[in-house]
Image (cartoon, rainbow, N blue to C red; front, side, top):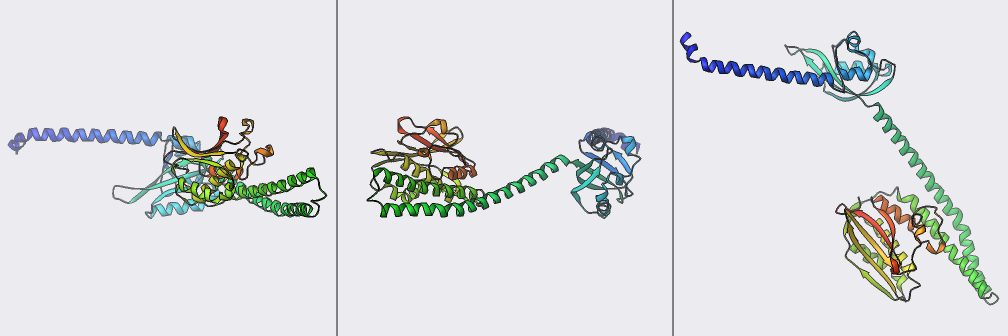
Length: 385
């Protein structure tokens, strides 16, 4: 045996050295692990099945306010809010029976009497024989986060209620205002038919102004109704080729082009991710406005195109109309903003809201001698998401 030991002495020495190194490594690992547990910002608590606290880390001190010596003489039930005591007892039974308990919400009481909302994960600890011995819990205070979530839920409910009230108001306005508008328009037409011979040119001009104003008022009512509905419409997002939508918009607006000399310049447009019906309405409104504002020109020039700036794709509709006073640019697409009547365009509020729902924005740029440019922006490659 002695000879055998002597012959294998190098191997034995190497084995002992390796074992010693492994023990040192394991001890260092355990030391680091213990340091992590002790210094964790989360409360890590060890207690037996009767609730007696056996270990209490720095995170528990900071969250609950009890020092380690004080806590080790306590029962974990003293930390449970009165309304949650039955739930806490059931939780201990579940853990003892081997149930996996993760991310359970429980209310705890601090030393100074504050009630905290806690996310709790529990682990069953066993002894050397594998029998249940104790429970270790990791507890995180999410009181402020929960309060913020509750506030968001409350605000969301208030916004939804406000939107419902706005929609109800819009419908009420629609019904209440349309009847007198119809009466005004009807009587204006009757005056034109029955009194045309006795009304001079100035009087006919006055009647025309009244008639035009009633049409404009009706469109404003429609815009308010559209604005109130847009936020609630469920969007069916798909890939949308804007080139196709431009052609569809031109087909829709064909009656507005009859008898006019219009030079079109339509450049290729990108494919975007969006709600097809909404984007079609946007393009109909933008091109329709270009047709409206360029009407005084003997030859209207309307350009539709896009360009890339940084990570944005900018789509634009340019016309050679009368131009837009940049003093009013911040009011152009807002609801209930005062604008000179000659600058008002149907649908401005509605299509601005549609673009916003796609994550983009709508603006107006100066076009120099060629009038103004209506723009909508979207992120390149991502589309309007």
